[in-house]
Length: 191
Image 1 (cartoon, helix red, strand yellow):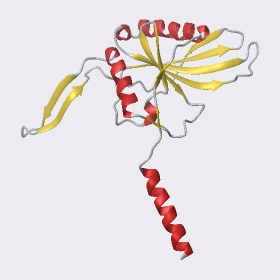
Image 2 (image 1 turned 45 degrees about the vertical axis):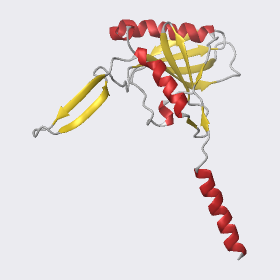
Image 3 (image 1 turned 90 degrees about the horizontal axis):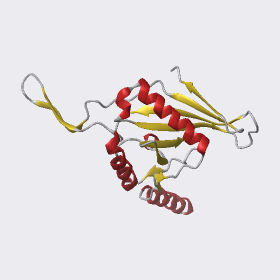
């Protein structure tokens, strides 16, 4: 009887946990690190030269790869991977595609990810995701209604939010290394 009661309690707690999920908000941050701002600003200028459509469309993804708070002099304080991107986020995408923070630099929206600290698999609220998606809209190509039919005339694709110029960059980008002495280096990523 005692074992049966324990089983029921465990079963109840496991089902009770399914109804409750913690969510986090995607937050706007005001960036104050002038070295970081200068580095990302320089990367934005380079991206506009190397890929002219970036002048009008696209955004920046910044991933913190490495952080050493105890760095001194010429040691690396932080290393970031910086990419220009051109795809829209969707509500159904996994939490890893959504950033914890976003900001603006030189008229571009910057999505900021921290891969050095796992966020305990907390998801983001739908409201928070919708707000970010709406803020990203001016940086993406216009939506078109796409209808594709097979040989028999049957509709096989009916996409009201198709973006013909949308693309996802797998390779490329830059590494931004910030040193403890306030200097920075930008290195073009090879792959």
